[in-house]
Length: 143
Image 1 (cartoon, helix red, strand yellow):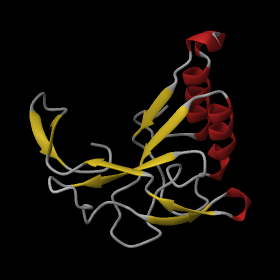
Image 2 (tube, one colour; image 1 turned 45 degrees about the horizontal axis):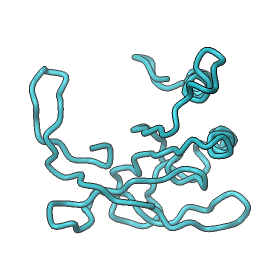
Image 3 (cartoon, helix red, strand yellow; image 1 turned 90 degrees about the vertical axis):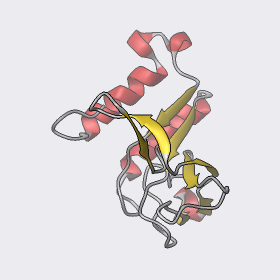
């Protein structure tokens, strides 16, 4: 959904459709999607909420990196902060929240408030593939 020019709404919408019903074959669609992209600020991705609703109604679980703007409350990125998305935060080797891990509540659709992240996973000094071709220790909610 993203390219060298960024992440355009039309491209992300087309990618979301493909994930759910590739080539019109909804029986081949994903059951879980893990995404490592988002935008800062409540309401910044409200347009994506209906897509998440369709995914959820169709049995697809959407998981998004919560963002690396913590530790203050209200720093969760979107679409991770939307009602129908599962937000992932980061913990260190001692299973303590990483200071960079975004957190807090996000005003959900329908006036509800959801505490985010929904789940946490190891996210500090994780051995990861790097564009250089090497493996390097990286940190973030995407890890």
